Image 1 (cartoon, helix red, strand yellow):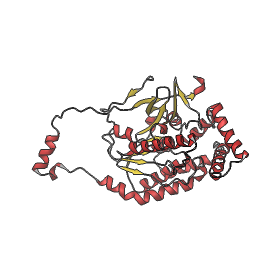
Image 2 (tube, rainbow, N blue to C red):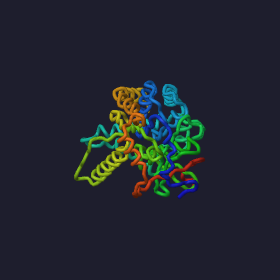
Image 3 (cartoon, rainbow, N blue to C red):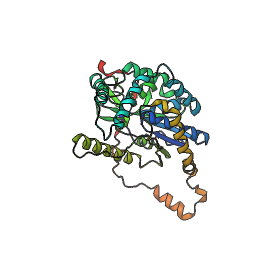
Length: 354
């Protein structure tokens, strides 16, 4: 286990005394821009946001909002970034083009040009470890996430990552926000892995696509899970082993995400399937989708926030007796082990320097 790392202790209910709605923001690359629209509606409807746990794109949006809980300002920052010279338009445009060619060629014979385009992209990933260089990735994140620490956030914030070195799910709760976000959003093969000391991190969504469990383990009572991933219909070719392996892996990931979300008090899945994961120029469309979806379901959250435990003076004698009985010492039962580590993250660098 890396230094300063600890397996989470369930008695550490640091969020138990916080009232309001906790939000688990999932990964989905550019589709995660829909998170911004959802936050905007929650803010406009005066839903108190008590804390955020994010993974991948959810960690980027979550960190920005936790530092400055103003959805309009955060959306403006994302818009300025996407239109800036920092944004690697060419690379992302290339990713979109290759994917679009692949989608258009389904059921057709693939042309040599299409094969070369996809081969060049995959070749760069195989040779260098990522399509986007470490310097480009650092500039991307630095343009959005300022050089602050977790102590600077206006609300509790956590980011999740995958520790490849020790094969552990990790929850970052201290240190540099920018480092945590880089570790949380490092999609294998697209963005480079991030190294802290001797530990290598990649995208937390590979272990936990929507990080509900960390919030619940820390004592959060009302959790909204937001899933912005894309689960396309199966495309099965029984004569190709690669197709069967891909679809089997996809099915396992979908089921795992369902299990990880089932304890959330509310689960939202905005319809982002029509958005390309690498098309960040679709900011306005993604925000609009998130807004429309949230407005249709905001009453669900209002009802959740209105639910209160009955006050003692409103209880009859029998109800008070049952509460007293429940507070008596109970036989100990074995709890399921917590499967994530909690740790800070400070300075990071490219993995090849280890």
